Image (cartoon, rainbow, N blue to C red; front, side, top):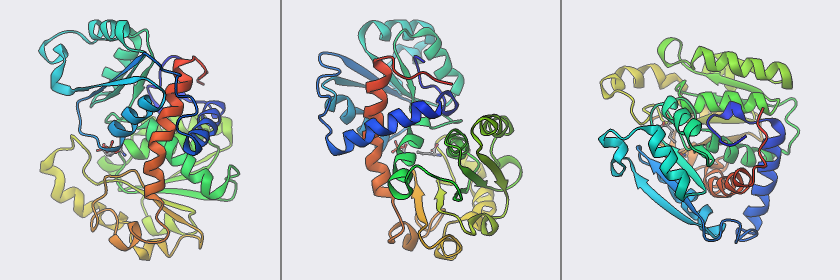
Length: 312
Ligand code: CP
Ligand code: NVA
């Protein structure tokens, strides 16, 4: 597999390899400090980023390479140069391209036209690199045997809910997305694809519209912002009202198992999707999760550039 364009591209063996190497990089970030020596990695983002940008740039530096960060308005793409031409040009200079943007189809087109690995660093539909960090964090807490455990995403049926269901399917877990019904539920095609993967792996995919029922006996409660980058501002009031019952508060956490953890990809809005006592409380693992963005992106770059990710 040349690129990581979507979470569903990864096989269980790929994730196992990526997480094992990431765990090594967590212990020793400079373990492969010349893997990208004298090489560059382009990081192109048309949406804001704190964690993904900084962890990617740091990961490249730890592999001995040089990151080149490019803001959305800085390429000739914005002035009509095609995605295909841009992909061809960047392929001549860099060893990989990390991209964050709106349309998944733009990332797919870059992948199809670039000869170097292209990594999806978030689109409106997916966020595969986040899920690598999340699963490393989950395995640190619960080990790799997930049987008998329930992993619950609670909130907007957005890119994070898609990535959550898909990675849970790959990992053979019981995953739940508890979201409102209708336009803020996860995309039906993504759910169908996760169910297809689940049939191969023995995972259970559950869609719920009842946060309390979903949270009962959960090992993980995960949430994300209610307004994602690019969401229409005009919908904020209605969306906030509809999502209120899905906020992760200590009431909801208390329905989970006694060893349950709280997860969030960040950025967080305390008082909206999560209460301050939960995210800043003893069950929150959000800082560990954020740290693992660096170790997992480092691992992904390392293996993808070496052609060691096989895909499904
Ligand atoms: N979790 C995540 O992707 O954070 P950033 O938007 O800050 O990169
Ligand atoms: N759903 C959020 C995730 C941010 C990391 C967004 O797309 O803005």
